[in-house]
Image (cartoon, rainbow, N blue to C red; front, side, top):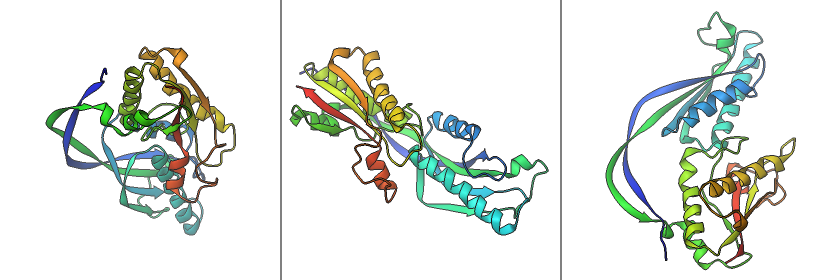
Length: 263
């Protein structure tokens, strides 16, 4: 059988000095605005091996101390949830603080309404290089015993928040799926997109776009389009009831699955 092989680097990890990224908010708001989302997504898209260690929230001086303390923490929580949804590496014991207005304020009020993301970059040093056959990977093992009608979760496929763009660390998962399609020329599939959480408008749009993104990746890599279809199911087929109880349940509901149509 034709095998799909990639070169796999095993890394040792070192930690560089901590860096920071400022995300700015509108007056008296804790929701991320369009520019704030763009700032974070641009940072994520750099594709570096970042790990977030601290989140600090700040406000301008307008309002009471108590109100600003609460607003600062709301801003921190908004950024934290966005990072988690975007599958950014966040340390388990992350330091979260809301300073409210109790810090040295800038004369430019816009600069005071912010969350500061403190992060470090894991430096990667190659130790050895091995040939890893992707047929040994988890999804490839699943497909070996799969039969018509089986539904297989594509593990560790992550997208930017509210986007159909795959984060860089998930590209190897797409490559594995490609190899499965190459190694199994009779395999026909439906790519199914699912999302989590209650959403105010058209959840099917995002789930369909994500399923289509996987489909288009395979098309670009010369897989016959007659072997594949795609569909977004929004929140109509959750693993856990919505609203979810915690982030783990949200992760389970936010997924891409492969339905085996023909072997």
